[in-house]
Each structure stands twice: as structure tokens, then as C-alpha cells.
Amino acid sequence: MASSQQTVTPPAVAAKAGAIPWMTMSVVLAALFMAVLDSFIVVVAGPSIEADLRASAGDVQWVLAGYQLSYAVLIITATRLADLYGRKRMFLLGVALFTLASVACALSPNAGALIASRVIQGLGAALMVPQVFAYVTVLVPAARRHSVYGVLGVVMGMATIGGQLIGGLLIGADLFGSGWRMVFWVNVPLGIALFLLAVRHVPTTGSAAARRLDIPGVLALSAALFLLVLPLIQGQEAGWPWWAWACFAGSAAAFVLFAVVERGVERRGGDPLVPPALFGQRSFSLGIVLVLALYALIYSYYLVLSITMQQGLGMSALGAGLVYAPAATAFFVFSMVASRTIPKYGRRVLEVGAVILAGGYLSTGLLLVSGPRITPLLVIPTLVLQSVGGGLVITPALNTVLSRVRPESAGVASGVLSTAQQCGGALGVAVIGALFFGSFHPATAGRVAAAGHAFAVASFGVFAIAVVAGIVVFLLPKNPS
Image (cartoon, rainbow, N blue to C red; front, top):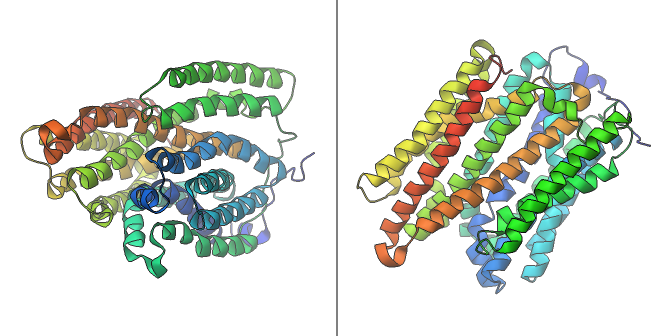
């Protein structure tokens, strides 16, 4: 039996009706930034890790994949555990595990130890991140959530876009001769501070509806997600062998089994891991599709941009990171614009953002195929245009998914949202990565020209995903918040 059967909000949080508990939000949003950043900051550390640990390219790939895999597979189960045993308890456990795993990563003597530590770090992220969304839904008044989601979107966007820049700065600084290890050491003081602040400022909440953990549902969903995410992460690197397609087929079967199991549990009056009725809400089901598409494009595009700048143009990790700076600024500004205009204009803000976003990717592709050789100055304006659109649509998309979710379902809904982000990112990297590398032929065209051509092809591919996202936006309820 769970030890936390109902939502509990301390008087300090509920003292002022309609107030946003910014201290609590600041603590959990800092944890979100740390978790998302670690999905991207390690990308620039790959070459240094490979040289220092004498690791293979496959080992380095698993340093990235191990984190993403455990993170994606365990999110929903972690949210259910939080419903049962208290979100604060799971959040603190996640922060502690993430911080200790960061120490283990920084001290890793070989690639195997680093990969194992990254898997544990991903588990810590899975315990932390869904609680962030759940706390927003449970603690923030509905009329004020758009403001918090505006900040939340900025945090996620800046962690995504800024990961390359921060990683480049840390590795370039080489503090105390730490090299690549600093990208993990940086988590330790932040993690300790967050743990201490969370003990004092993060309230204990749970779900009154949660009674017990749905073990058959956990097993079926975990198998489905593992079989889906593994080939998305590793299939391209391995040349899409037979086992990748077998995993996709097995994943589809496991998802069907999961749906059957959950309906059976619900029919018997039990406590399903993911209540099927949740997907009956139009804003939630369409919002999840939107999040899948948006995170597919943003994860994949910044990855191929980094490869284009470093492998194509020969820039350093820091130099490539600086290319993102104007776009990061635009994303920040227009995320704030979105949070302020959504209450008045509703879905129109997302519609404008979706059109600008798609136009930004299309303009990049058209510009590069029109003749000019790719340079940072050539693509920065269109990157800024993409970020204007992204700020207007990505930030409110999170609110769209959770806006009509009841507080007792906030945990599991947040878990589904976080899973959609991770699966969308893995799907985008697999599809757009295949387009990019399939078009990148430096031996025949020269490295710069080949990178420009491949980046143009990737831009057209991401434009197609942005069009799908735009169609979903126009199908959303008119007032998504």
C-alpha cells in the first residue's frame, strides 16, 4: 500500500490564493534544466572521451544512448511510483541518483564504467523530470499556468540549444586538467544545492486515486518502449540491420499488449499504469502528437547543425556553440511573448508560431540549394527565424497537453508527456540523421560543399515534420490553455 494517498500542499505554498509558488518552481525547473542539458552537453565531449578512454565510436554512441534509453523507458513507471509514494520523495531520490551518477561518470576509468554510470544517470532523470510537470499542474492555479509554462519552455529550449555552447566552454576551459570530465562535474554542486533546497521548498504531493503499481502494465510498457527506442538510437549507426526491424515489430506488439492489459485492469476496477480515458481528451491526445513532432525536429536539427559546423566547416565545439547564441536569444524572447499572449489569443499564437517555424526550415533549405557555400553567417538569420516560431509554438504546446488534465492524473499525464519528448527526439535523430548522413559525401564533393548539401536535405526533412506539427496545431481546441 502506498504511503501517500492524497495531495498535500503545505500552508506556505497555499497561503496566497492564486499565487505561483516560484521558489518551488525554481527548484524543480533547475532540475529539469540539468536533466535536459545532459542529453546534449555530452555530444561535444564525444571526441575527447574517445581519445582519453581509448573508446570506440560505438562506446561513445552508447555514452549518449545509455542515458536516453533508461530515461525514456522508465519515465512513466517513475511517475506512477511518485503518485503512490509521494512526488517529493521520488524527486529527491532522482536528484540524489543523478548527482551520484554524475560523480561516477566524472571518475570513470574506462568506457564500460562511463556507460553504466550514464544509464543510472538516466534513471535519475526519469525520476526527476515528470515531477516538474506534475508540480506545475498541482500547485499552480489554472489561470496562471501559462506563465510557468512560458518559463518552463525557455528552460527546456535553453538547455537544448545551449548544451553545445556550455559543453564547449567547459571542455575548452579544462579546469584543473579535467577535460571532458567537467561536463559531469558541473552537475555535482548544482545537484547538492538542489537536493538541499528541495528538502525545504518542494512540497509532498501524491495522488488520491493511486492504490498500487500495475506490474503487468509496467512490464508491457517497458518492453514496448525499450524495443522502440533502442533501434531508433542504434539502428542508423549499425546500418539498420534485421534486429532493428525485429525490435520495431516487437514494440508494436508490446504496445498492443499494453493497451489490452490496461483496458483489462480498468474494466476490473483496478489502477492502470496509464488510464485509457486520458487519451479521450482531445487536447491531450493531439498535444502528445504535437510534442512528438516538435521534439523530433528540435533534437535532430541541432544535432545535424553541430555536425555541420564541426565536421563540415571545421569549427571548434565552442565556435559551433556560439552559432546558436542568436537563436537561443530569439527563443527566449518569443517564449516569453507566447506566455503573455496565449491567454488573449489562444490557439492563434501556436498557429503563427507553427507557420514561422516551418518557414524557417524551408528558407534554410532553399537558401542552401540556391548556390551559396554554407557559412555560419549564412544560416544564423534562418536559425533565428526558426527560434521565433519555436518560441511561439513549443512553449505553449506543453501547456496544451496538460491544461485540461485533472490534478489526480497529473503524474501519469506528465510521464506520458516526458516520454513523448524522449521518443520524439530519438525518432527525429534517426530519421533526420539518416537523411543527413545519406547525403553527406565529402570524398566526392569536398567537406564544406558536402556539409552544405546534407544540411539542406536535413532542413527539408525537418520542414516536413514541421508541416505535420502545423497540421496538428490547427486541429487543437481553439483555446489550448
